[in-house]
Length: 251
Ligand code: PXP
Image (cartoon, rainbow, N blue to C red; front, side, top):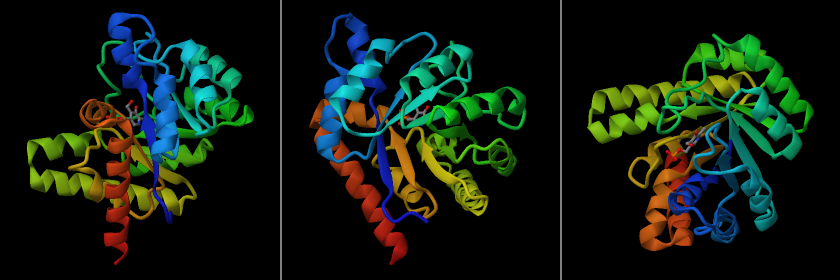
């Protein structure tokens, strides 16, 4: 069980805004420094194959700007593996990636692709990275994640977030149940469960209340909200909601 749920801030979309005009503003490294001051526990960045947000040169700049541990999201490709083993982030999260998608859609099929994923997990672990696999909350995916030696699974909350928006209460409760069961299953297998994708102020509390989950990674909503209230305020409000959810669940 996790006492204090960690908040990893995904700062990719600061780079998305920067890239819309070229140039250097807004600088994701500045967001990295602010995230630390605002009380985030880690930084998440996704170096995509098409470099649509974070770029290679950002990696080192972000590291220099903030003492927070970096979680590098990456596709299971030779190119990304070479970059990650050279950069040696605290954590590396393997995600599925399609060029045409707007964001990471669906979890990694660890069960179907274990032959190609297992050597990458080993290589990253040998380079000192804590490896996580971004998967659907599915017992088979969790079992195979354990077999191939990943210490962490990040449970995809994208479907939960979609159902929240649709207001389909029965389907939402089923999905929440799937996430709760998956988090328990991961812990039972000695894995540390994280969760993320599509989380907002409105939908975060039921996920934050799942006691087995150790970390939430949240990006798009917080960077969007920062436009209106500033990044420190957005991070602090999310942090407060997460803490409240944990306290209420324990009471
Ligand atoms: N976790 C993973 C593995 C992701 O790929 C993403 C999106 O890049 C997130 C968390 C954060 O999702 P969102 O930006 O919707 O908060």
